Amino acid sequence: MYLGIDLGTSGIKLLVMDERQQIVATVNQPLSVERPDTGWSEQDPESWINATAKAFDELAANAPQAVKDIRAIGLSGQMHGATMLDADDKPVAPCILWNDTRSYKEAAKLDATEGFRSLTGNIVFPGFTAPKLVWMHNNKPDLFDRIKKVLLPKDYLRLWLTGDYVSDYSDSAGTAWLDVGSRTWSDQLLAATGLDQSHMPALAESIESTGKIRQALVERWGFSPDTIVAGGAGDNAASALATGIVAEGDAFLSLGTSGVIYAATNSYRPLPDSAVHTFCHSTANHWCHMAVILAATDALNWYAKLVGSDAATLTKALGQEVHAPGSTLFFPYLGGERTPHNDASIRGGFIGLAHPDDRDSLTRTVLEGISYAFMDGIKALEAAGTHLDRLIAVGGGSSSDYWLSLLATILGKQIDRPAAGDFGGAFGAARTGLVADLKCDPAEVCTMPTIDQSFHPNTDLQPAFADAYARYAAAYPSLKDL
Image 1 (cartoon, helix red, strand yellow):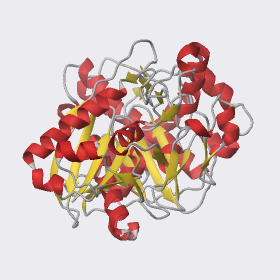
Image 2: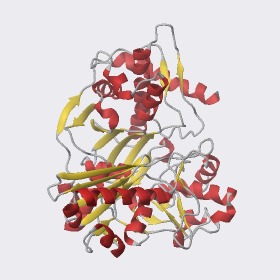
Image 3: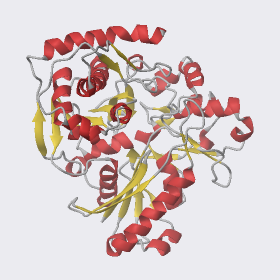
Image 4: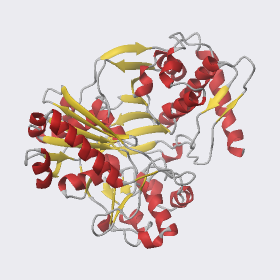
């Protein structure tokens, strides 16, 4: 058996699969996010441990033999979070999460500092880890001086599981401290934020062992003492393994809280000016390009709450046939935007509201606006040299036929929806455990799922959507000035 643990923003998920990659058990535990100030987003790292322990309790109670048979554990996790530990491995403050934008000034200063873009291959975004540490230095120097280790969220779980400070390359690439081309911590970038190598964990490949589970956990839950913990991956890299996105040209589109287009590359090709993320992939000697929008289903859920409904009810009411765009535009910048704007202060809105607009027409408008944001990402990826013909759709939004048809039409790409299954970070994490245990070729294990349905562009509607997208793109400078 192989266990994947996915530490998300809203919950912990455990997934157990056998050597044939058949899922035998899943467990979920919720997490909450604290927002004590505007632009802030925090979690208590101890809540991750408590939630995982509760999930282990449930798994051991319902499937004790499966727990005993687990040979390897893989980890997947929300990226960029600054988990700051003192000399006793206790958090000195809540973890500052990926969607926290308080350090936008510090990020801009680091981004203008020599070496950051050239070594990391990325813009220094406010959500990245490094500017959060500079914010701590500037605003809470007493706490900053107590920091002895900085870990990413999933690696804090690893510390609890094994007692070791280790991270993988895919997750570490999102800190703004990693030389992404050479896959090493950069002394120059660490020094620019008041840190050094002693503050960093060791680095490992996603698909290799990083240690064995601690004896205390063996005794409490019945794990085998020989159970290893694989390097694992950041959540998007883990989802890439779950969907078989391994080779150049393979890509998935995630319609989750945030929106991601993740494309595997077989060479290091950074283009930071485009605001495309260039990170290490979860397989050795591979990298990836990611276009990221901060509010995908998050924007749809916001609108659903506004009109007293839920996202599934709203999208189901649209049917399956895509409508031509109306005159109203929606901009999903509820908490800023990454690709291509790198703008923490931009905010969303509707433009062109008219008397005929009703709940259904505005639902379509919201979906269109999010899809135009993905089109911004496609253009940025193409500028970085990544050209895609098809995308595998994952995430909660992929259940909507209307939305996938709309995306295919606006993006001009075939969108494939997998047959029923679990293709998220927990499944990808379990695959890292399997590969680490058997020491096999990840391409043989991390195969693509069976496709249930393919969605193709509606060529009759493409000119109208192209015109609407041009209006959408042209409106950004005016919104920014506001």
